[in-house]
Length: 295
Image 1 (cartoon, one colour):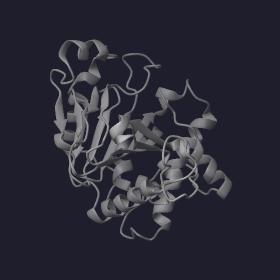
Image 2: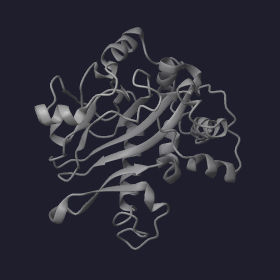
Image 3: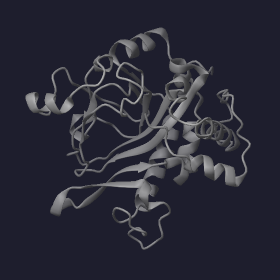
Image 4: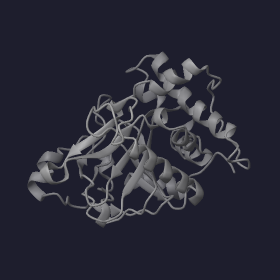
């Protein structure tokens, strides 16, 4: 296995359309392990926004990382996102060290890539909340800039029935778009939008500039996606301190190290990333708690 993951066709598709889908990217045994781990995290989630305990009365660490959507009197508060998943799960952290995943990021951005944020997006069966049309970030670095890339690792089948991702191809080239006006004119189904269907183990990569969103999950099965995001260092070096950037970079090194130390992937060649990963317990905790590099 080599560090390079994306071929020329993949790169051209991404550049032209703003997204690519890599089928069977992660082996099914690792997908199953991640799926079981997410089920554990859901079981131990707080009972509602900011609550200190889960349904069983157990104390929840860092409950602010669990986000909910209020679906009204019938469905109540429904969990939709877990932020900082590496802090809550060494299994999710190890998945981040996958050499093909980091190789794909390096194929787009080189070894100067920097992680900006990670999360788990959860669409509960028949209660999964929609995500409105949006472009990620705030365009701090200018409307024409490339503001990063999102990697979505799919743990379940995703299609229009259970709230799969929808995108507007090529919209990443148009700068900041007035989506409120577009929705007012055309309704929720924007012109040119298409569904991005995925199977367990698929990886969907899309530009953060790309217009994207998803509809509600009305199906009896869940839709869970683990998201990893990357910037180029040049995009953020004037917005954040070197110390903050280095702490986020060390998260990659930590993931690579802990994946290797697990002994679960003996045939893998680890991704090579130039950062110190020999951390004390206190340093490890600080790296996992470092705020995202939002742009």
